[in-house]
Image (cartoon, rainbow, N blue to C red; front, side, top):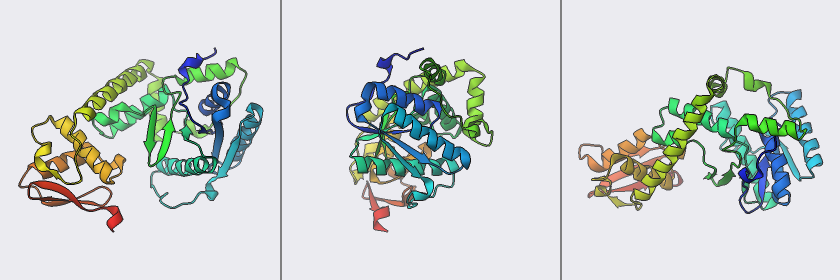
Length: 308
């Protein structure tokens, strides 16, 4: 079943395309080749985690690139600079490796960003996982179609397309792909969530609808939230709806250097209390080694990571 190509929108510019050899990234590569071949550089990172299977994935990607006549950059995990790549969570660590690799490819080929093959099922899984971690309203919006993460522009052209449609498309054009057996392991929380959603397809659809509603709601709150200067009057966070105040507080912390993943609703609420509650501590630490001080009815940052 050919996918309607109008569903596959690649913004202007030239992009790396992250490819593992799995069905999703293979489908993205085939579709991108048909619509924007002159603007694509395939990028494959061999994680070296599955022995011969990892090497077979790399060989598959090399052959696919030759078939599609697309340029390809391949690197291996042991070639990646390990500065700041220390997340304890394995999935976060692997993602950090890939992002570092993509940044290298983008810089060396003068590209505008990276295309990733996250699809509609991935979106539902992400929303459910974030909701389980207690991330508040922001957790419900899931992944953005286009975003910037630590200087890396990420575009997800397949985000509205179910995984089953991508596999059907590959079968319709006679294109094979690689299967990663670790995707069936229940040692990974995402795989457990994937199995839950597979047993109730309606649930995945509802989660995506909730995600769409959350994105629109958050966008409205961001427009309504006051933009705070580095030093701002405490009253700026008073007399506005609590969700709008949390949005303003979170944006202020992130712009000051706090890691976005660490700016939780609880962290934002603490900043608001520091601004509005005279009994709260005058000086408090926040993610990203930020030290925030309340003085003369103002909040300001007296120390950042760059000051240490």
